[in-house]
Image (cartoon, rainbow, N blue to C red; front, side, top):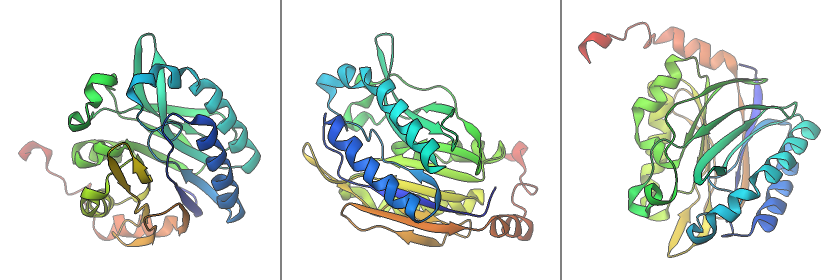
Length: 259
């Protein structure tokens, strides 16, 4: 992992308005690039939110959106991660794209845990694998929103070498207290950095909670956002990661046969 500045783009995602959301993201990434960010994370379904009736139509434009973000990644020299609707035949997946600083797609992750309370399981296909992706800034594990409540997923990625956990979310205000607790827990128990971008503002019958955060392996919130559109960043020091893992060797002290 490199010493670097990482950032989150928090904004109110407009339902089914890809062009407006793309313009917002362009401005946000430009601002973070001006702060020398090498890694930027976007919210869940950042191009369109969750307009279920027109989700297939939204997914048709995702290749175009991805190509645009790839060009920004190349121009800014920045790793960019965020989830979008991905069409695969008649199935739409909630998929995070990991785009490296050279514009190449380092990998994709399809959301494994679908939030049944909001009928995600009725509108999306389910992913079936985790992913740790080699990028120019380090080894990155990816989660999407509800995945955060499942510690097994983060632990598997940590055991596969993840140094940074990137979380894209549209997490509601009503449960926002859980959000920060879980982000800090995933950081501490897996001894890695967390970059978590949430949406904010109003969705259909829901208020998104904001509170995007960058968290250290010690569980310290290095920078956190409020409830409005905001781009935040923080410096990550690779030495902090190595020293904490050496001080408390959790991975060496595991005893899996007892679990």
